Length: 322
Image 1 (tube, helix red, strand yellow):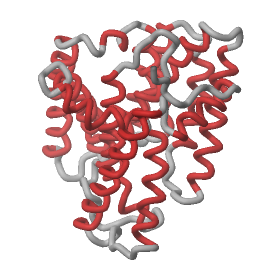
Image 2 (tube, rainbow, N blue to C red; image 1 turned 180 degrees about the vertical axis):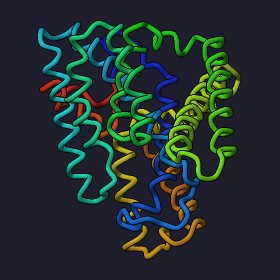
Image 3 (cartoon, rainbow, N blue to C red; image 1 turned 60 degrees about the horizontal axis):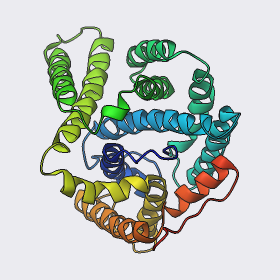
Image 4 (cartoon, helix red, strand yellow; image 1 turned 135 degrees about the vertical axis):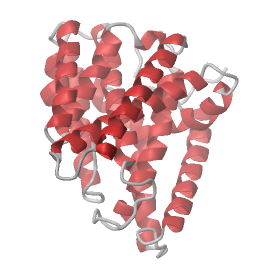
């Protein structure tokens, strides 16, 4: 969500589209098996860690961008934000009927409990809370709502300190930050690999969770750096349509996986090959649909409905042509 007169930040759409692809690969076998465990997931044990931290960070960024927009347009911006979160909760509850692993309900609840109250805090307090909650989440369980809350606040702080406005123009920042994240991830991975048998098992859990989180940061920085190269047009062509319609694609992916499993009878939950092929087919179809749809319309269909619920009035959907 961007405020009037502000161009969309392409890097955020690329990150959102990339993360959407990973989340489908991480969840496809679980969706096909109605949420029960599978022997081997398509991308290994660290699947959700690549996508969910990035998605959580992006949600916090989007929330604060919307806050800026609402503050310039209405007298009670908190009400706009509350309507957005309530609408997301309703969408998530419906989605949970199909997929018990839905993340939208958690995002909506954590958003109401943490993000919404944070709008009344100074930016230094938001940054401080993020710096406290993220490591606390790793210490006390490796993730969950506490980590989501910390990453929400981190994303919000990045907007409020003006860093997101520079994300499409910076090279040095992502390069240096990526090096720090890579060094930290390598160190964190070395600890559990060399911890002695019989040592405190909490330490490997903490360090592996930290390594996964740092690896997610490495991927973000790598994508931002690639966007500063001649690969930018190709990355935007692939990921921006998916990212601009992330809500529509996230929800329709569940329907398509269930249809492929229960109607077509494809062995997605038992075969990695089938899982990869179906995920690729779904993402290709979604990319094609999103690309064609966005040529005529400003937003995806579910994004438009969510915007309607957020602002309380219907906005134009069709792109104007002269």
